[in-house]
Image (cartoon, rainbow, N blue to C red; front, side, top):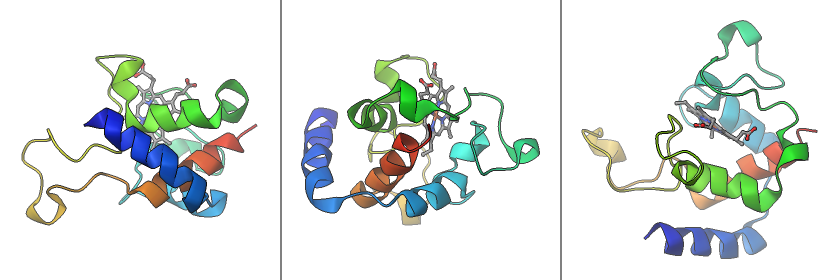
Length: 122
Ligand code: HEC
């Protein structure tokens, strides 16, 4: 399931094309991406950024676009106990609000936008 999703998203990446500016907004948003809840990141107030996760500063140097995408889609591959949610998964959550049931945290376009933003953090 996750494999086919990752495959579909990798295919979509070719046609969708990410927008780094939109990605930055998603990452900083407290209602969609929520990355800032755990990660410090360029452009976000450090006093309002989480300290549970490594800073995203410079992550575009350390990881390729494909690796960044995999971090978003399957973070448990790098650490089975990770706190980081799988942003492409739409099943296996419990007690999800009705309006959000069956939906991934981010859709394919949003994933590509965030990947594009991360890739530019050098
Ligand atoms: C609930 C906390 C949490 C949220 C929310 C979260 N992450 Fe993470 N993330 C982590 C943790 C913890 C790690 C470190 C890996 C681990 O779990 O060992 C991590 C690792 C990463 C890494 C790898 C960093 C590196 O230097 O290797 C990237 C990239 C990343 N996260 C991006 C994101 C993005 C983008 C978002 C939002 C779309 C996000 N994360 C949301 C907790 C979170």
